[in-house]
Length: 229
Ligand SMILES: [Zn+2]
Image (cartoon, rainbow, N blue to C red):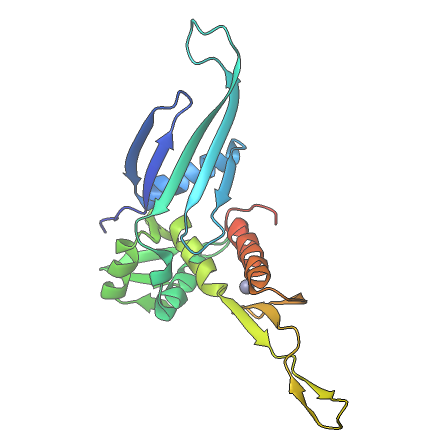
């Protein structure tokens, strides 16, 4: 099945030259795996864009006649061609079926007459084509089909959606004239996630609760690449 591009890539090379291109899911997976293997910085954006930045830092010279030893960086910016927000609940379930087969001792998902077979599950040709079209599946030379990094990031973003809850702090106030009434106190916000996570702290500022949500989501995005929190 024809693979659509997974990423648009912008490269700012060591000497400052810039270039752009697109990568298939397989090319994207190889680029990211190589960067992780070489110890480059692989940093997913904390928002829901699915973007990834890979930075390689070296000490070297810009040319053979350059006397100065400099710290040089090559920055590769990967932007998903298909926004990960577009993953539907059904597609998330299908990707989970495929990803579950990508494990030692299991027979990986395969294409059979346009359908994807993942264990006992069968994904229809139309649904299969859409998953390929969004760059979320990688075809391997041995016929195995796995979920690409772009697909796994889309899965992680689907699993971890912010849930910020406003907690009312109205309290009864007894006035000096004997009357009383409920008055608003300091508002509080609780940072939560669709995965069931709840931050232990309650926040006085909504922005602080949003930052806690981003930290939680970023930890799970880093886990996609095998990076520690
Ligand atoms: Zn979560």
